[in-house]
Every structure is written in structure tokens, then in C-alpha cells.
Length: 386
Image (cartoon, rainbow, N blue to C red; front, side, top):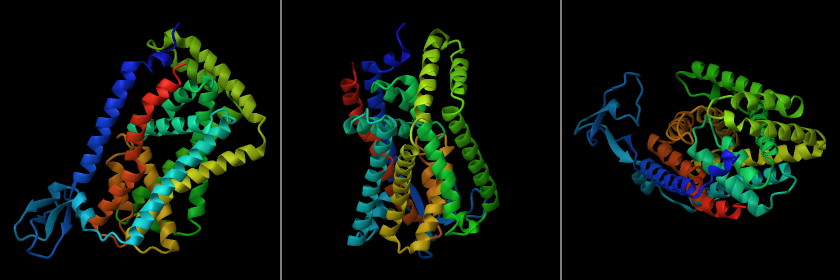
């Protein structure tokens, strides 16, 4: 019986995915750059007044319902693109923005190192590049709560990695990512106080939400560890349970094969030396630290931040990451930009500058993967056709 995985990579489906990816990418970039914010101006020179339309007693610069038209008001509408044009682009600005781009390259480089380590270098650098770019493309098009992991195992399988082992590799990457997060939180609190991590106002609710999310991630990390290294049969039982669904039942034999592969991969992973897992975790740390330093570089391009302030930015990104993780929108779009302004608004930047930095962050760290993925996907399909 033909595997459902092969039919998923048929020509018309790939063409449709590429076209949709490019259309979504273009629309998201346009929406981000043309989005309107309200900025405070000298009294009597604006076009709007704040009326607290949503009655939360806060000025919400992104909410049009919070303002009404007033020829003598103290607020004016301004798009992010106009705000970016008004910024004084000095050599320091360009230096830090170049640094942000380098950190993004570093993020993917460490991901490539990690995937090569986990496949025992069965993937060469070219294959690793394709895998990571398409993985990121899938993540960018998926809701934050789903991510690209569900697609990654099929990508690795297409690169001749047995599906069960590919599944085990994806589980290990998820475990390493979560482990980094679990260990990073205590480290950050060595430099910043707990109260400085959250914005004022509804901080108590955020604190409970944050530590609740932290507990869930810790539990997930423990479960993933036990599944791969101690009880791989749990994965087999889970797959067989899923493939009992009526529309998947005809492929239940595949679930059994995958389960056997996962158990074999588990035995192989248990035999790996401790140094191997240290290298994998260091590569994970490199990728995540590079990811976080993108925001630090962007903020340093426009603001004068010291060491403690930079550590505070890093700490707040841990909260930001949880925001993005549970969002239902593709790549956390919309929610990420809002959370950026809410969490990083106490570093002396104006609301419109924060909005501009949020857009730059997404232009550097999110949108490129939509276009790169759509471009490399057809080439990758052709290269791995056999």
C-alpha cells in the first residue's frame, strides 16, 4: 500500500504550498509595515484624542477604538514604515542591525550542527541546510502551539532517515529545546529580580501564567526524556492509538514500523557517550542564545543599554517566547509584535519606536523563512525525489 507520506509531496501539492507560502509571506510583510499606530504629539497639533474606548484605563496605541478624531487633539496616526523613515540611521545602528542578521545566521548554523550530530553526520551540510530551512518554513506557517516539529519528521524521512528514527530525533530536539528553557530561567534570575521580569499592571496574573507554563514545559521535558531513553514503547502505543482513527486505520501497519524504528533508535541513543549529548546540548544553547540576541542587537541599535539592561531584555524574552508558544496564529504573528511592545516598553523607547523595532525583529527573524522556504522547497523535492 502506498505510504501517505509520498502522496503528500506530489507536484501539485508542492506548487500549491509554495504559492500559498509566497502569498501569505507578502501579505504579512505588507500588513506589518503598513500597520497604523497612534503617537503622542504636541497638544493641539494632532488629529485624534484618547477616549479610552476599550475602558481599560490605558492608552492602547494599536487600538483605533481607543481614539476619536479631533482636529486639536494630542495624538496622530503614523504607520510603522513612516516611523522607520524618521529614525536617524547612524553607523552604530547599521552595526547592530548587521549583528542581528549574523545572530540569525548563527541560529541556523547551530541548528544544522545539531541535526548533523543527531544523524551521525549522515546529512551533509547541504542536506542539513535544506532540512533546517524547510523546517523553519513549516514553523513559520504553523501556529505557535503546533510548530514545525510535526513536519520535520517527514522532512528527515525524505532525507533517507528511517521514519521512526526521524521521529526520535525530532523528539530529542524538542527535549533539548525545552531543557535549555528550563535551565535558562534560574540563570537569568541571577542577574535580574523577579519583579523586573514582568510589566506593571496585570503582573500577578502574568506571574502565575508564566510559572504555570514553566511547570508544563518542565513536565514535557521529563516526559520526552523518559519516552526516548527509558520507555520508548510509550511512543509505539501512542502511535497505534492515533492510527486507530477511522481515516488513518488503513495505515496502521506504518505505525507499527515507526514504533519499531523508535525503539531501535532509542537503543542506539542509549549507547551514545555523554560527550555526544553535551555537544548536542551546546549546539542547542548556541541556537537559542543566537535567537535571543537578535532582539538585543536590534534594541542596542536604537537605545543605549548596559549589561544588566541587556540581561533584563534576555529575561523578558523568556516570557515573550511563552506568549508565542501558545498563540494560534502562524508563527505567533500579531501576538508576538504586541507582546514585544508590552514586555520591552520600559527601556526608554517611544511606543512607535517599539513598534518599529518589533517589525524589524520580525523582518529579520520570521519573514525571511517564509520566502527562503518557498524558494528552496521545490529544489529540495526534486533533489530527494528518489
